[in-house]
Length: 295
Ligand SMILES: Nc1ncnc2c1ncn2[C@@H]1O[C@H](COP(=O)(O)OP(=O)(O)OP(=O)(O)O)[C@@H](O)[C@H]1O
Ligand SMILES: [Mg+2]
Image (cartoon, rainbow, N blue to C red; front, side, top):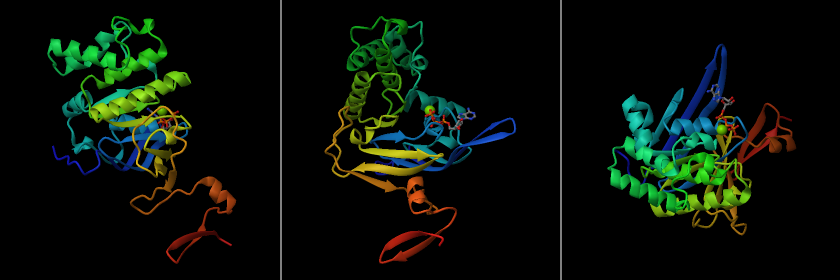
């Protein structure tokens, strides 16, 4: 493995994803860049259809980009054989789908659902059941081991989903709107749980969310717009841990992201305010770049 501690754990460079349906092409990702450090928690926000799930699916090895580079933990996802990709999915990533029903087998109990991924990695039987029990206790479901999904609430099912995703102790956890179907209180508990997982296991976490307060709860939020990262919000002071309670005292800094070709996205309302249409004048003066309307 070529992965080194100081290089980003997740690296996406100039990613493109084009879906083709008959004669129609949909560009879901258009030159997306993203770097996430080992042990970092990053929230991804963006409008419906902006490419969030497409990005997560690529990082999970479920889908391949049309162009660009993507590596996780020093592994180039595009150079892997299909066998290596399968192994990567089992060992290196935990994935939580937005639709609760997709995360569990309906006819298996919570214990069996968490045990299953470990069977695929040939974990010995005793270790499997011990770890499944530990994980279900970690997510607060020690008393629901023998329940099948239909006998669990939505929040409980998402907790099992987290335990399933963590079964093989993956260094990377990808969660696609894991709290989308939950009420606020349960969503808060799930977010706290991500915080413990990040702290206790050092797991790098990427979480897609619609939570409007997310910037006050995690270290970094990236905004995806039309298949490309546009802005980023960071905490000014050192961020302690992901938590459900919004730390509204935290000072946030918002940045516009500049890609490798020097392209940036200017928020539409700024463009509207200064009446910039298709072209603008760009000038540099005293270390400041100004953007002006044509005339
Ligand atoms: N399998 C597919 N075939 C064709 N087009 C697709 C496919 N999956 C996604 N798309 C299109 O790609 C774009 C990005 O979709 P994606 O699911 O990544 O968006 P999203 O940001 O996750 O949206 P949401 O918040 O609604 O989940 C959309 O325009 C979508 O219609
Ligand atoms: Mg989605």
